[in-house]
Image (cartoon, rainbow, N blue to C red; front, side, top):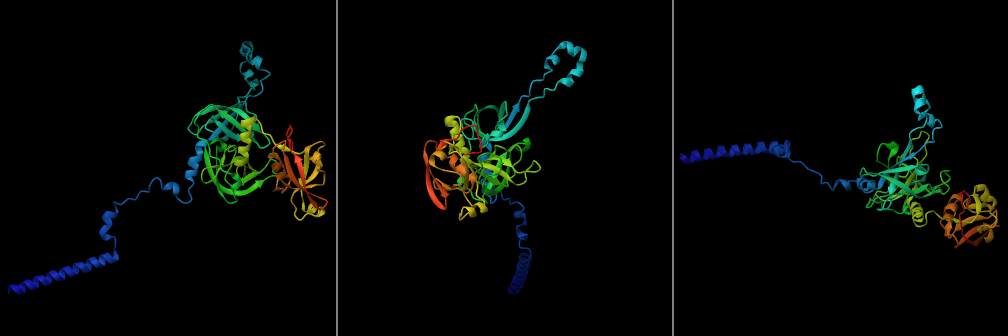
Length: 390
């Protein structure tokens, strides 16, 4: 009797356990997260702080590296003295004419303008555009940490639109230079500056073109073109690569409205560094000169001179007693290469000759009478005032 009772109880337990297992199986099959809902509500995954800097498509690490080295530049220019000022300061006239004299008070407050600059040394040297500070009587620098310091001009180079200024400070965050010669069209770049005075701003784009010239902006043009937004106030600011290194100094934009249209120009960092080092070492910039006037080779000229390619620079004139004249160059010669570097047009010719050292000989390859000739020229020093002739 007891055995039968035990068997019935065991059978009931087994059947109940089977039914429970079946119910759990069905619940698990159709609602797999049912048993862990409570635990899931408590699980929070936090991204590590150092991971965000490595996110694909983020350039925050480059911006953080370069932004402290970019400053805002505020300049002021005093206006001409008011010819009526002596009457304005006379108390007798003030007593009788009062507010009417205020209408004569045309002496405006100092004119203010703004731009940007890049700290290039811990000792306070700042590189910017010459047009930012050219007409300034006073220059004030606003650092990224909020400090404001007065600056003085160390030297300028209007031909490349570069200027070097200095503030009295030490241990400043200096930018790291990159070689702009290694840039390629399509490389990502960031522009840092102070557009419209709103404060330090970073914009992103790519290198649209290299070696832009014949723009009529400077005498020596070898611009980096970018579609990174550059607006008034960005002049003199930094163009950096994705590692936060300087590749150019933002200089100009093409615009019909005054704002960015996706065509901005920057002076290559390699050229800017050469200018800066000459200003530091000798106070000005010395350039090579041979004394010729040149023009581009058009397809028609290439055909008439029986050239294989429409490239080079046609010598249109030679200055008497100039290095070119003494070397035997004459009008009608076509410059093909300078020190082994090909001449693509008159703009590249200007840049190639400019970097040559005065009082040293250089080899210039020319085409004359359907022949190729190498001519040795003793390079001279480019005279002042500046002009478009080389």
